[in-house]
Each structure stands twice: as C-alpha cells, then as structure tokens.
Image (cartoon, rainbow, N blue to C red; front, side, top):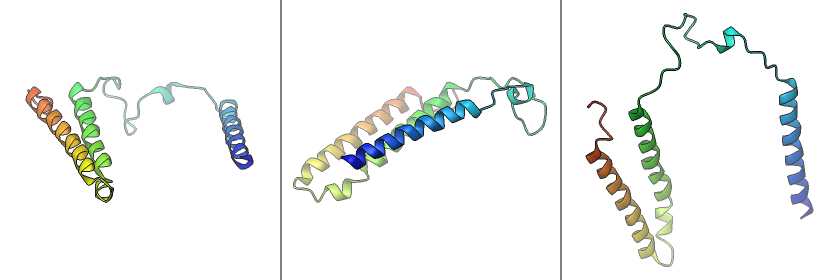
Length: 116
C-alpha cells in the first residue's frame, strides 16, 4: 500500500511540475512565419483552410471500425480452449455477422463509392 501511494504521489507531482514548467518556459510569440502554412519553401498557392471531402472522413471511420474487428477477434484461438467454446464461437459469429451486415448496408447506401 505504501509503495502504491508513493508511486501515485510521485507520478502526480512529476506531472504537475512538468506541466507547470512547460507553461512557464514556453515562448508564446506567434509571428507571421509561424502562422503561415508550410509548403516546401514556396508561397502558399491557395487557402490552407480548405475543407476535406466528407467521403474521406467516412472511409477513414469505416476503416477504423472494420479494423477494430481484428482486435476483437485476435484472442479467438485462445478463447476456444475455454470451458464452453460454443459460447465463444457464437459471440464471434455474431460479431462477424453484425459487421458484415454493416458493410452490406454501407455498400448499398453508396458510402464506399468515391465518384458519384
């Protein structure tokens, strides 16, 4: 208990000290060079604040969603050695079915198409 309390106190105090040092030592003096967009030494050709297409974000979120499937199914080979492997197989099949239905829905809605 004493070691845990010491480690928590040390972590908290170190975090507070480093944060305070950062605010104290940081030089917040933005000038035109720091605020301008960097384009390999050339003057900016257009506005650097143009919005991205919403399709880019949609595909990125879909990638993250379906990439999460791998993290959820990774322990499956070890989970089959449990007392009830049928339960594990049922939950894994349910997860895959749900993700497949989501993929079919996105496909039918046209969310995976780049050009209209």
